[in-house]
Length: 400
Image (tube, rainbow, N blue to C red):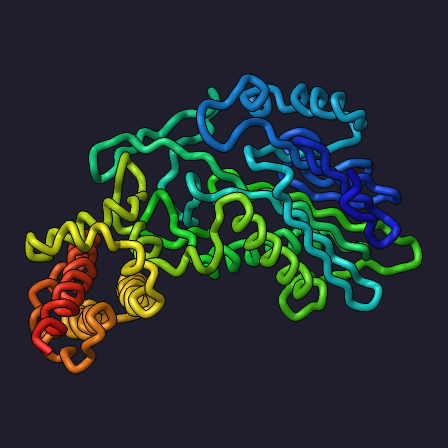
């Protein structure tokens, strides 16, 4: 199926398990493809292929993409009648039918981004601990055990980006375009509040992200030399890639802004389950309910969704989470943690109860929970604030 024709130089097609660009005129291509990757000037096709389902065990063809990337590429191209030796391809478990395509034009410059992706199982932050090393004898796993004692294994999830320019680029600008696309992807993840599954930070991508950038050759047009933020090319890359990244994560993972406005989403990176960061809404509610009187615990767990998705509660939690990050990054000194965190936790308690005149009292009561600065201490502070507000919401109203 033809998705679209762009700048009289490229056609974008989508079939059941593949998205591919067919070049109508020569393009310079820089890609991370395992087969046909690197810098190429002879390619006729740049493709993205779904090798397996995003959850459950992968099948033999997916494994072949790593053990025999050339053979895998020839197999894929043969199925779709594409020139195997003149194609470079990315592979993923993401659904090709969910591809998000975005295009922007300024004068004679058109930029097109086609992004597939899923992050729920493999989102990571730059600098997260690795799970393997390529030694001289091959790939060597690096055993890692989570704080709960369970071995950590990489999850499923990849963001693949195909990026196209209607104008030629210098080789340096091609590399810069890759940098700009990576920044745009990370900005999209930040705006959707996507958490790392391997650390307590926000995600900057996944462990298996790939990219291919293609720029049309034009004999009568000098190549663009910059793809940075001050150039229109850089701006269009940023706009299209960020928009496409957010769009595909809404489609693939259901990460709408409304869904991400959630106390559970904000807090899940501070909990470890099965070796990596994930906790269900019910599990978080049960954890927080431990700070409630026993007769209110079941009521709270049963009503967790309106509590966790209340935008005022989420906003107060977001403020606490961001402050916690500011402390972790060293921007705020540890010496002011107790007073800062108890004060903002009191705001969270008031958000839940609706009793903002109680903020001074909440702050005093929350001071004992504002001492520990590790993840468990922070989780206890937030949970106790939510529980305090929930309890007083009903306690005080019953006296009025």
